[in-house]
Amino acid sequence: MMIALSGTPGCGKSTVAAILRERGWTVVRQNETTGPYRLGDDHDRDTVVIDEELWAEEFTPFEGIIEGHLTHLLPADCVVVLRCRPDILARRLRTRGYAPEKVAENAEAEALDVILVEALEVHPESRVCEIDTTEMSPEATAGVIEAFIHGESPKPCTHVDWSAYLGITTWE
Image 1 (cartoon, rainbow, N blue to C red):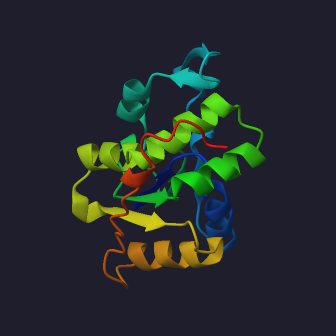
Image 2: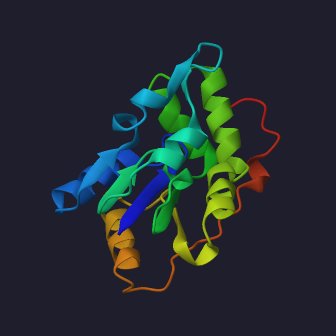
């Protein structure tokens, strides 16, 4: 079974993936698989551009967890989308040194449910788990993910609504 661990940058994917790896899961980082699909750099948006469609089409599923902000586009057996309240997400990204434009882009994407919507366009709702990490520890988040994977708990889809954060013009 392949599990996609996705979410907006800053929601906790890498931290939770490291915990899952320590617990014995095979974890592959998205960036380890996208090299041949790299089209170039978008300097205005401070990001790498990849051919997402070709990457997803040619991706060979494996047993384990694939972690990254585009992994929900892959042919996974289930998808976990980590979420974070946009103002907290913006604070985390500023701490990482993200430029104000990049902070705003990611906080707005989170407020608009961009990754969740994309995941639901590719996968049936029954295979998508949404977890609000705003106040949850990475260890607890990993536990919820493991319970979801093992079918030991009902789908912990929180259906978060960050729409109140839309229209914010600064994420200071």
